[in-house]
Amino acid sequence: MHDDSSGSSGSSGSSGSSCSSGSSGSSGSSGGSSGSPGPGSSGSSEYRHRFAEEARSERPDLTLLCLLLGAVADPALDDADMDAAQIELDRLAGLLPYGRDRSPAAWAGELAALLGRECGFHGTAGDYQRLESSLLHQVLRRRRGLPILLSVVWIEVARRAGAHACGVALPGHFVVGFGDPADPAGQVLADPFAGGRPLTGAEAESLVRNATGAPLDPAALAPAGPLDVITRILNNVRAWAAARPEQSAVALWAVELSLLMPAHPARLRYERAQLLVQRGEFLAGAAELEAYADVVAAVEPATAKAVRGRARAARAMLN
Image 1 (tube, one colour):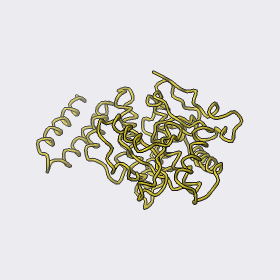
Image 2 (tube, one colour):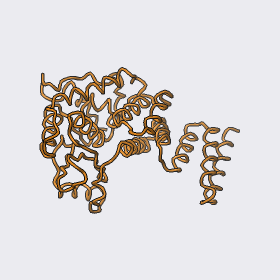
Image 3 (cartoon, one colour):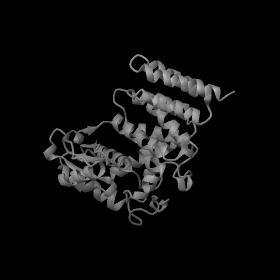
Image 4 (spheres, one colour):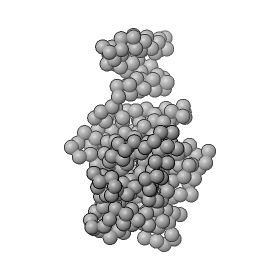
């Protein structure tokens, strides 16, 4: 596995530059070559409760949700570390000239110059193999991550500096849009994974076609709200864990946080039940299987019957 730990904040960006701070987040949980920052078996019930409250609030805070997700994933992360991450975003924004009168292209250039070139935020193929790449506090520390987490850094720094920036959930590759999303012709897309490189319409089309084999749907250019971003991050974590059976603990907390979102597919309960059984928690898994069967019984009676059979089989594994 490609393990690119050289991207930590102590070595990114120019030496002695204004971007050389590395104070954000916990640094004692790199997790080895698997990219897992820690056991992540259950996380903190307090942080889960706060995550659920924030996700259901009138105006969910994207940074806070990302950090609470990180606190569930990483037992070493505490409130002081989360405050440090917020301070780091504020500090980075303070390196930009504040103002709202710049063009979208000018803002995209300012963010690319600061975050991409000077601070060294970017991504590589190896970052897809690391769980840290989906955790904001680790992305701020390493200055490396998945496109969606790097986009969160771009969006939050830009917002603090007065720019109009939003997430754009292109299929297969998350990017940032600068400018009024109601005016697609005036919007400028940038790719934080490539250090903030501006994207032409043709390049965005090519990104999507390479990822999906289909043309770009104009609806994909709509702004992604905080809950859309968090759902996609959790989907990424679940996919990462699904490819690694030994990481069932990670899969479980990702599913459980997904279930705390205001809207979620009912099948997540089935996924959680399967994980519980896989981890040897047969009674809890059987109870969750029966609860899922109750949910789908009215519309999918055959599925409900089969799921109840799996619940009985799970209980039988205790005998």
